[in-house]
Length: 337
Image 1 (cartoon, rainbow, N blue to C red):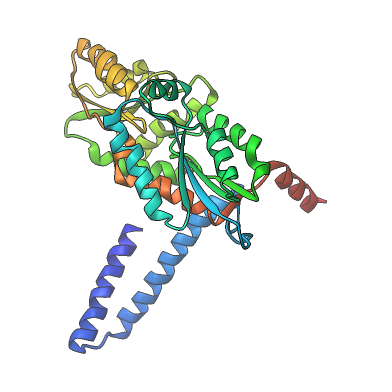
Image 2: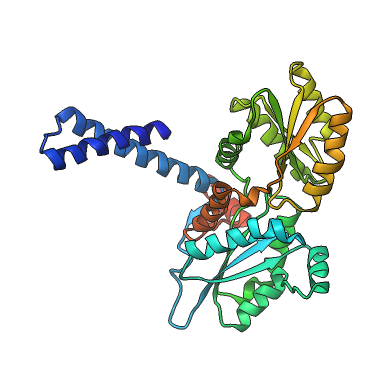
């Protein structure tokens, strides 16, 4: 796609030259412009189709709105008690979301009970998803777009879906966007963004939270795709799942010349796990093994390009609806009769 944009930029320059100096575009340039535009459009359509053909159908979230109906965007975060990283991540994407959807009422919710309890002791009160949805209902909202800032489709997303299921009948329409990593294209985008953080003669370890459920396979997929996309100087480890730090170290040792390691939190905020586990225990363990270790202390959520992926996922859901698996199986069976 980048080569298409480069070619398109060249053609735009040709067009500007034509209008400025009245130099005619030859037929080859006009033909090239047509092909590039069609190819670019085709690529964009193919990408959208790839996202929709399996689980989604085209459907405008707002087309059923009538007089008196109101729409809102609910951004759901795990949350953090660390004010420094919150300002750079949660607050930043909240602001970007409001700018991206100016016509929607904006609300937020946290999912971590521990975080909410600790904040409450400081006089800071955050609603959980059920409470936030109940308030939206009380305020007269009928159409709700929900986007989480979860990294993978794991237990936090499972819990959020259960909360939504409890409340969905209170609204005319309610939709949930996907986490950061959902389609292979999401992985490629994230890899492209984070690969810019690499350092010469250094192995960068992306350290995720991890999970003890099968969802931890998503971290393994990221680890595999990093190498498949041409980034052998990146490896994945998790604090509480697979791949483990030992798995990462095993891959690092295969590159015998590597003596320097950079740890990068693969988490939305750089909170407790980043400051204590990554910059503490993991860093010390690697240093004890003889490596020179640095920590890039920034959460994924403070990267504007990562924020944009979440916003794009929310925007996608304004135009698409998730297919109920039961309906999908019935339709498939009917086609085979």
